[in-house]
Length: 356
Image 1 (cartoon, rainbow, N blue to C red):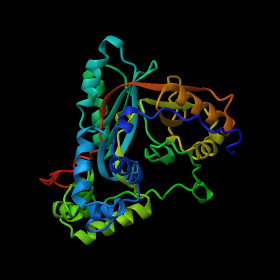
Image 2 (image 1 turned 90 degrees about the horizontal axis):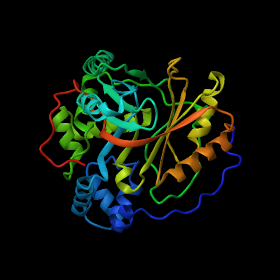
Image 3 (image 1 turned 180 degrees about the vertical axis):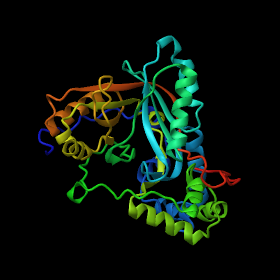
């Protein structure tokens, strides 16, 4: 399966939020979403690249986080490398949606919670330290709302990143050799889990952030850096860098596209989709017949609905999916969005410094 039939997209108007940023802010948001420098003074390293001072970099990141454009700066963990997770959905009567969404968001293990255009209109992600904690959260939601929860855990990942070029430049991704996914390493060592607890909400905006998180986790600065390097190389974390909030940056059309693909073709199709740079997430999840027929999911963020639908059509042409049943579930409201917080790791304390 190739990318035959793909077309060059028409340029779109620059979102107002992006247009109002300084060149420094734009570069911080766009150029450092991955490959963050794992050195004792990373802000100074970024400053050298940008031709400015470390204090200017940290102040800009602090302001961007205050404006909601940056979620945090730090590692993005691959699903199941730390704890466990699932994507869940509920069919909520419209008159109850806001109240039920509040009940769902109240579970500490829920990190994303969206209304989407579908009969199953509430979709959320649960990330927990272990299966027991995850199941407890789902049971509590079922008990408190009186509604059935459909749980769709990840089976195979083809692309998990959520980082992309904010300038709209297009490029093809190269799939890994042999379409091999990274090894599924699960962190179990107490020192590793203490470090997860220290970094999961972002690096503190202090001159030596790895020393600060090391002090919280009981590790030396050099050991923190070495563990993060090893996690990155081993696929425990998919990237290290600036984690942006797409909606606040003008990418207001967020769609989860779900496909019914023959089981024998799902991996091949998933790797094909992963090659398109506008696909920010792509993975296989289980069918739940008769309620849910779809087994391949991808996420697309665009400036408007038309752009997203054009990209869905590009996937159809490029991966030979013109006849494949699918639905486009646009997001309507965001009730909760934050990084996964794995409670029960380490002591859970945060350093008394600003974090990015």
